[in-house]
Length: 139
Image 1 (tube, rainbow, N blue to C red):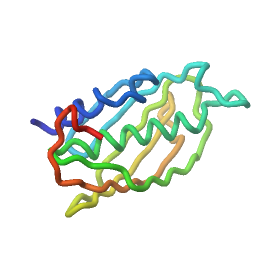
Image 2 (image 1 turned 90 degrees about the horizontal axis):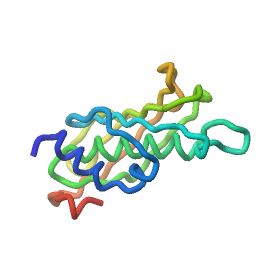
Image 3 (image 1 turned 180 degrees about the horizontal axis):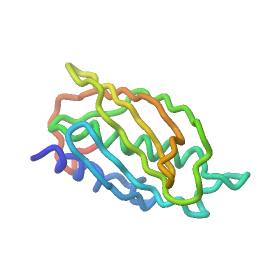
């Protein structure tokens, strides 16, 4: 399978992405971009987009990016700094591979609002399992 096919297969089996109505906008080897519709149900107690939604979007983009290879990968660490309150509307999360080798991959993650302003930024580490993934064996 091509890298984008591995990424699409992972995303197709991610139930949280489906429950949040996320869309996979782009995928290539070591990269993914997901879009999250920020509905009223995603607001926190002060009316802004809930940090859990921002974190989930970053996590799912990261998961897709690190699963664009035949071997399964699982996140072992993510650090995300919230740097701005997003404007109303969809948010976009991107994950880009910085380095991958042996059993570890390092990724940069960003979350942007509808005006392409940075909302959150961070890094993530994936553990590479070295067992081939099939759609039914995806983590």
